[in-house]
Each structure stands twice: as C-alpha cells, then as structure tokens.
Amino acid sequence: MSDEDDLEDFEPDQDDFEKEEDEKETEEEEDYRKEGEEFPEEWLRTPLTEDMMKEGLSLLCKTGSGLAHAYVKLEVKERDLTDIYLLRSYIHLRYVDVSENHLTDLSPLNHLTHLLWLKADGNRLQSAQLNELPYLQTASFAYNQITDTEGISHPRLGRLNLKGNSIRMVTGLDPQKLISLHTMELRGNQLESTLGINLPKLKNLYLAQNLLKKVEGLENLSNLTTLHLRDNQIDTLSGFSKEMKSLQYLNLRGNLVANLGELAKLRDLPMLRALVLLDNPCTDDINYRQEALVQMPYLERLDKEFYEEEERAEADEIRQRLKKNQEQEPEPQRDLEPEQSLI
Image (cartoon, rainbow, N blue to C red):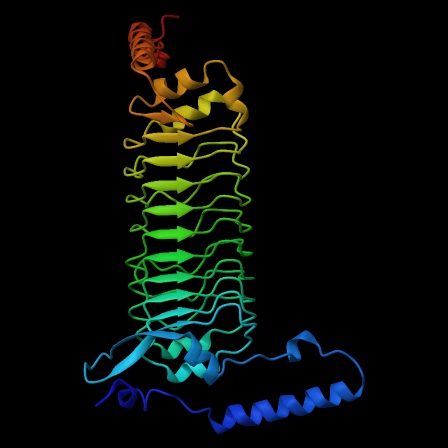
C-alpha cells in the first residue's frame, strides 16, 4: 500500500453544517454588497481550505497505531485565516503553526489529541483555553488579546508563551495539572501582581515590561533558576525568600529601587550568581557594587561586569569588620521585673 493510499481516510470532507453556514454568510455578504457599502471586518471570513492544507502539510510519519502514515506538521501562517474548523478531522497533526492570522477561536484544536507543538502568535485570541491535550509540550500565544490564564492544564506542557497580551492577574494555573511546566513567558502584559504563579516545577519565569511594584507569592518556586523582572515599577526587594533556593539569575533592570539597604533582602538567596540592577536609582550610589557584594558574598556578576578578586577581598574585610562590631556591641539591658526593681 502506498503512502497516498494510507492518507485517503486522512483527508477530511467539509460537513453539511459548515456548508450551510458558508451559504448563509455568502447571502448576507451579497445583501451588504448591494447596499454599496464595505463589508464589516467580521464578515470577511477566510476559512482554512483543503488547498491551504495541501500546501501547508509536511513531515510524513507513522500514525499512533503504526499501521498507516499521515502528515503531522502544518504551517498556515499569514493567510488571513478567521476559521480553522477544518482541522477537526486532521487528528494526527503533531506540529501546528497558525500564527499571524485573524483567529478568535482555537477550539478545533481540541480534536488534535496527538499535538506536541502549537504556535498561535499574532492572532485575535482572547483566551488560551483548550481541552487538556495529553502530549502538548510547547504552546505559544504571544501577541494576542488574551486577558487571563484560565483553562491551561496540559500535563506535559513544558513551555508556555503568553508574551504581549493583556493579562492583569495570573489565575487558574494548577500545579497538580501543570506538572511539567518549566518555562513561562509573560513579558509585555499588564500584570499588577505575581500572585497565582504557584508552580514549584517552574525554572524560568519572564515578567518584564509589566506593572509590578513588588514580588509576592513566589515562595514555593524552589526550582526557579531565572527570574526576569526588567522594566516594571518595583521599589522594594521584599518577597524574595530563602525557599527560592535555586535562583541563580535575577534581572531587575529599569525598576525603582532607590535604597541600597534593600539589597540585604537578597542575601538569603544561596545560589544567586548574577544580578542586574542597571537603571535603578540605587546604582547612582558610589558604594553600590561594594554593598551588593557585602550582602551577597557568592555573587559573581553585577550588571554586566564580573567581580574581581580585589573587590572580593575588600568586601570580605568589610563583612568581617561589621561582624566584629556586632559581637562587641553590649546587649540591650532588659527592663527589671517589678520585684527586682532597685527603687
């Protein structure tokens, strides 16, 4: 049996319901055309067609049963698509790129239970919600109109990209379901809080270009190694916990941290090796680099420069001197109990 024979059952037919809908909308467009006015944008439908599928399909592989072959990769980006209903029948697809279209609905993808990789950037989506897809590992919904993080529960999802949307609060991300998620991209949204990102398996978190004023609710991210908070409105370094024991890289560039004393709140991060604080008011202080190393002796790089051995030695001396002074300070005298009063 040839590959073409194997694919005969794989090619779907447009069902009667879709044909009726097409005929209905065509009649409405004709009525509108008679009035001599331009079509409203929502009427200019561009559904995915069989011809587009044939052009976009590639990567012939065995199906799950191993008894047939099917094309498992589809690329139909920049086609002005408003409808991907046709995908309901292409159940063997594993890689789908529908980016740079005009899609508002991805529900046909719920039928693609073998899907591994999805890119739906640059559409008009208001939600990333899909049914649980058991094998989905990478999903990108960047530059849409998404307002929340509800309905994302794929057990093998490792990378989630929601960059450039309109999300104000992270909600609905269940750590019991998102057991594989290690990288989440939320740059360029409207986040006002870091609450709701309670995902202990997370390793890389990108929150730059939001509206954050502080860090909160990240105490359980014990596996987090990279935290990117550039270009927010953070003025305090409270919220960093010793439970964040794996954090190695912290980018706070372009925030509002003014007081060098805030650096002391980072000394409980045992693995912190690289810190970026450029374009914060505190970097104008002449003792900025020295104070950072005094507070965080294991720090290897501040901003773009690594620490020299001479700087380390000087910071060690200051640290020892401070410790000695603290040990020599007399303990504050306790108030005498009434029965011990000398009066």
